Length: 123
Image 1 (cartoon, one colour):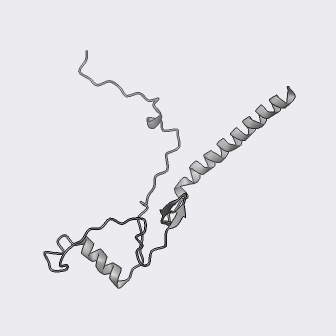
Image 2 (cartoon, one colour):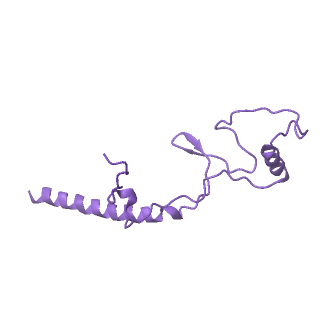
Image 3 (cartoon, one colour):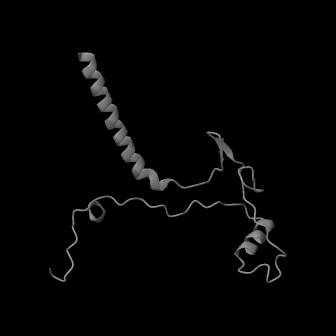
């Protein structure tokens, strides 16, 4: 065997240069809260490396935020299929290429179903 590495295949899908790139999400869906003096103070405490040691806080209590936890200034949750979810403002522009492909696939599937129905009607 030679000590040189094996040449990489050029025909694998993830290395093909002729295919369209997969759209990526540029912004992560982060919970956004309105800026008030209270929220600014809370954020500065959370970002501080040692808030208790530097005298900004006397103690810390960690609580689980359940489905009934509502943050002031936040949009109230919406109940979907029995589960409370909070609406997030997300720019869905990255989904447009996928949406176009799904529409074309849907049209193709509709025409296939129509063709099958016609063949059953003709019998």
